[in-house]
Length: 200
Image (tube, rainbow, N blue to C red; front, top):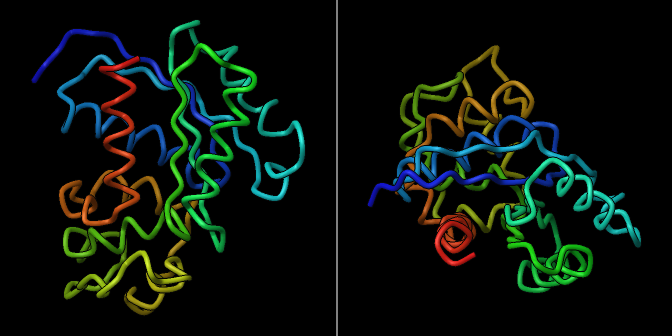
């Protein structure tokens, strides 16, 4: 389904690599899955995980994201769970965000362990890209791996090492979205963007 609707997203992230990777991935999902092509993403507001957990800090970041957007535009909060429980972290962050932007669509996206776990799910589509081996295969349980960055580093050709700030956006541009949706958290990401576009 294609639409001429203009969609704008505010974004809050924690990692340096997500500054470029998150907007790119949001636009890809809008274009390739939702059929929405007039998409604007504000430059993400970055807040580290250690800062984010402090009282008032996530709320401050959400307010900053709000300032860059219109009053009806949704905000996406993208935070790695690391060792936290996704079912607890996501709702807790959303509750905090809604306390300062109650009328705005909010989505909290919490990749299990790391953003890079999505690359593991889509590993076949990344074979031979950005220094990754040409026979790359996904692990049996991509979201079960604590250390996706290290897994990627271990699958690179000699002389090449994975770097989030160098490779994350490029791999987000290359990965097959259908393969990535085998990851439950990435599939949830897609469904949340669909909700924000069509239900908010």
